[in-house]
Image (cartoon, rainbow, N blue to C red; front, side, top):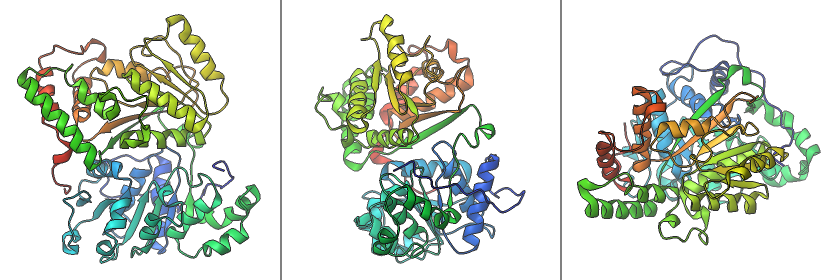
Length: 482
């Protein structure tokens, strides 16, 4: 049903201005998106930003928050999956540092409405909206923004009812997959964006059959409120490679388990800890089941980071496109491959040290010949050189590597001559863990030297990275304000 012909909106108010207070240069289609959002908000209505993955929906929303035509759009409530809250906080801090932000999440969150006043944006999770609905309803929000708005596709779900109950002057929904299974998905989202625009659920289901004809009837009613651009439509406006670092948060129980391992390593090794010892923490950030050898029997979706991987893969496959996923852990590669085959019913091959070199190109050929979605899971060392995998235009680094050269060579498997579409490179990072330190190390190394001559271990600054890794605690993050 994801391929139903819901048309994109080509209209945007003519203008040549740029959003005030945004520390970024927006592409022309992003400027058009910001102007469209600003136009809708000025008219007192909401909208659905449904651009495909990789087109910078978050930056367009931040631009509207910073400059809605008559100054800041404040107070704003941003609702996202719990694992993405820190990513939103960091993105706002990066692109609109003048905005005052509160992350309302976790056991330390306030129960007093007065503590929410004075912020331009409050970031919270769908679960927190359910639990704190009465608190959040004590404020009339200038705008409520739903990230990954497919989370309210079920009209009967408690999270959907709680979100729609919030007092707001306008509602903005953000999702690359506005229809996942049925037309009712889109009705539920639009019922948040502009209540009653499509009638109630019963009337909607009676009027619009859940098929292509029903979608064609629905299209003129939703197009004025939905902006959807595809990568192929704006490819000439994009760089050949789009890098999307995505910072994820562990939930409370995951953070506590991580801290227990971190403290054990610190007690056992202390100043003598090595990057090798920290592999235990990196394994945990891939999936906790890698710690005790239970990964074969574990439920992959029991870990928040894996659930985000699943969402990315789902959106890629909805576009009938292919993905390369890099992980340095054998058990993780097997877990991803099993999950892709079981959940999506598509080809998922693994290339690592277990696969003889002579068998690797035939595996790639099989992957390339698949029509539609498919996944190839590679160890960055086995897949880091010599392989040409331009059938895929998506790359996901599931866990970061200490060596930037290794990661860059891996990304180059898809981003090379023969690739006709921009390549989207996702890097999944768990906030305030060893992965954050690895990412900072990569950025520092890239800035200092050519990546081709950087070693993995033994450099003088390795000790500093070890100390930093052992001091990071996802359970003891600094306050959520800025």
